[in-house]
Length: 188
Image (tube, rainbow, N blue to C red):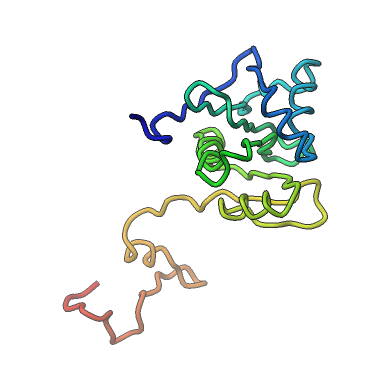
């Protein structure tokens, strides 16, 4: 028998929006309108997640659509991407499904080095995004922002320290004159 993790299938939505009726109904019962908006925007052509860097994903478990989430260019005009239209059926929450969707979108090569935003609609959503590294922001058209990670370091700590220069352009020793780092026996 397959585990839930083995049976979970995450796929990109192409030109045809899958049947999201169950998600739309469950969201409406919770007073959440993002699924209704997703379907309406898709049908009208206003939002198809088809611009460069955009995509919409669905998660299926044993063939049943249980979650959806996407990413678009940040609508405010900021140079960023916004994660949006996330919804996981209530009975399937807290099982890593939303995290799997979000992680796939966040770590996509075309977005992994960019600023990402989200508008968390409730405290539970805020906690979810904060666990994924998003930081609350005020006074912006989104509620949370995630800056890209720092670029990968190059070389050893010694190499990085050697890149530090005195204001007059002379290299600075990474330790005080006449001392050596603990465990050092030779010259630098």
